Image (cartoon, rainbow, N blue to C red; front, side, top):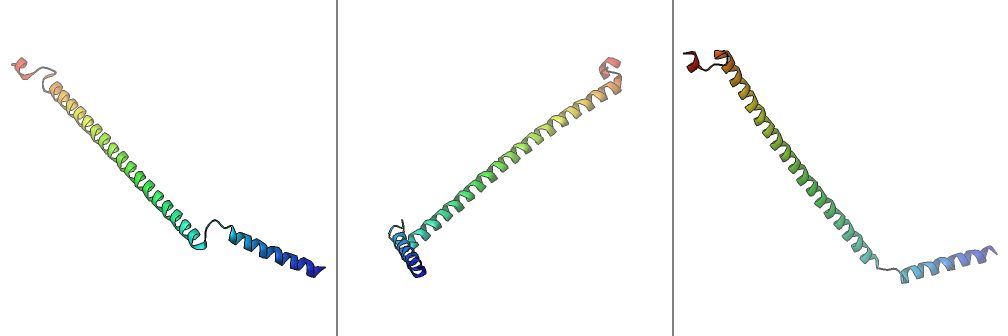
Length: 101
């Protein structure tokens, strides 16, 4: 009885392997090429996404620099206006030098 079960097992195993080989969608070489191609596509996708992320980051950094520069110019202009107003207030209590003469 054990011999019969074992022979059926090997018969089934052999049939399974044979059917698997007959109905495999692609040969081993074709499957390896398919996997290589998919790996290359994934690599290219990651490379493209990395470049897009780098470009976006560069754009955001440039926008930040522009905003900081603009704010610095505004602050400098405000400080200069404040200094000028202070000078005018101190030099003649708000009067110009022509009025004091």
